[in-house]
Length: 117
Picture (cartoon, rainbow, N blue to C red):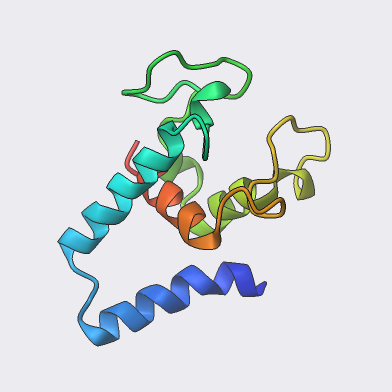
């Protein structure tokens, strides 16, 4: 397990212990993730993917739906966003984390949003 894959779990456990993990906090993370995923200058997921609620989606990548069922381990989905080239060297998806386009916190928020689709 990498330090990256432990970070979200550790943060959530610490938040629960501190009493900070509330439904409002979770909704805020989902809203932040949605904003990042739809942001053409940051996450830019709509450039390649169809996402429910998004305008002018691309069709290079798969439609982003039912991701919680497809990736029940959120760390796997986070790793894909961080650097899909590790799993698929032929991918066209940018390595958002490796290239520091997105922070680990931003990737975690996007995963929170994607798991609601």
